[in-house]
Length: 185
Image 1 (cartoon, rainbow, N blue to C red):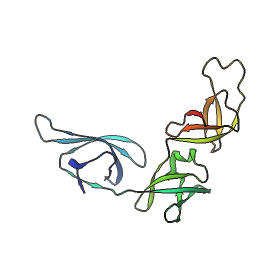
Image 2: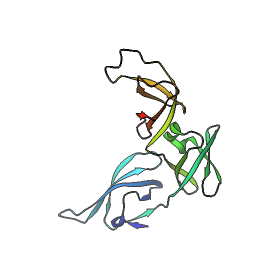
Image 3: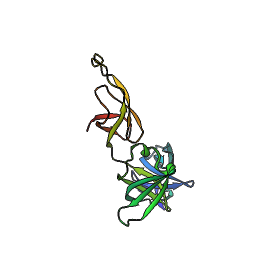
Image 4: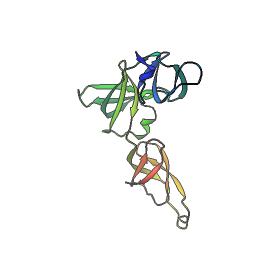
């Protein structure tokens, strides 16, 4: 248990049986009445952000989330096989635990996972990733006056918008948070 007076950004709490991460908190003392702590909490599994107010000094349950570095080995059916870099133990992760990170995973990649109660509850990727373009239509001459884009398929199967000068076989840097093209790699 942790007091709401001692909350910190990034702390993980167990509220109503769901894991919530503190995004932002503010201690507030109104002119009349008791002090309160206003928080923005992000549900770890769904990503939904909610505002919640607690009484100051109220106890909430803190969840201990373990972080570890793993290597993505391969896909097996709908599951992802990961290897813990410290113990070399292999883990099976369902696609639902990997989430949107699956669009950027290439065999051999290292990533950070968050585990709670023996199950994977979150995946952290680097802010950008270098991926090879496997298919894109050719750019047409004369279309380069404006910042026109065209669809391109990456080696992971994800489709993004790239500038007209990008050709198949080139490596591009992609923002893993927004899925946007950043630059050539």
